[in-house]
Structures are given as C-alpha cells and as structure tokens.
Length: 211
Image (tube, rainbow, N blue to C red; front, side, top):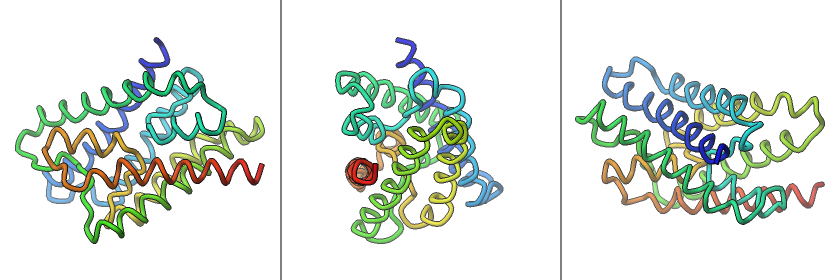
C-alpha cells in the first residue's frame, strides 16, 4: 500500500504544481512565464523522484509504469493498482485546482496549438527521449543512479521548454487526462493517452537492443 500512496502523492504534486503554474500564469497575466512553467514541471518531478524513488520507483506516469513492465523491471500485476493511484492523484490535483480557480476554463489541459498529427508525433518523440533517460539513468551504475532525479527532471524541463508551446509537452497520460476531465476539454485528449505510451514502449525496445 505504501507504494500506491507514494504514487498518489507524487502524481498529485506533479499535476498540482505543474498545471497550477499554467493556471496561475494565466490568472496573473503571464507572471510566471513559459520558462517558469517548464522549470516548475522539471523541479517538481526532480523533487518527487528523490522523495519517493526508493518507495515506489517514482513512476507518476502510466506510460513509465507500462514501459518498465515491458522491460521486465516491474511486476505486470502491479500495473493496474499503480495506474489507478496515478489517475486518482492527478484527478485530486485537478479538482483542488478547480476549487481554487473555478473561473479558469482549461485548468492547464494540454491542447495542441497546431495539428493533431503534429502534437502526436511530438509527444511520441518527447516521451521516447524521456523514457530513454529514465531507463539508462535508473538502471545504470550506482554513481549514475544518484543523478537520475536531476537527469529526468532536467529532461522534463528541457522538453517542456521547447515543445510546450506547440503540444503541451505532456509525456504523461494522467497529466493530460485529469485536467481534461475536470475542465471538460476532452477533444484532443486521445493524443496524450496514446503517444506517450507508444513512445515509452519504443524507448524500452531501444534500451533492450542497446543493452
């Protein structure tokens, strides 16, 4: 149970802080800026990895959980409870933000700025690179493993920084699903439910081939 609680809290923190930064940026006329939003996502992911990495593995992302199972590094029987904990954590965060900012329309939902195909490809590539970093750092030497949190958080920051304005740089199905459900912006949510999972699975196949 402590693993599920860790996944719930970690996912809650990521969605609350990350999408919260987007909402507050909108509410304050751009006080946080796009750079600040990217930094917020990167820092909260880094903090939660170091907080819960030894407890649950710090997935906070169904795409990561599924990819670890495919790689043989995670018990497939644990996929459903982990994903449920992640979904509930993300929904709790979006509901909290809706309570705090009821006038906000999108609640930080990921909405493509261009075409659906453009965002689909971007999300695939972004998650592919993120999952590669996760696998090679978390499964590397002890010295590399110590730096895993910084490397993963830094990758999230980097990808959010340059791709966020176009596709939202979600790389995480529940990060997109929760605000979409609570705000009712469900039109393009399929992109963020499929592309990250496929991208993470492709990264796992690449990792196996290289290893």
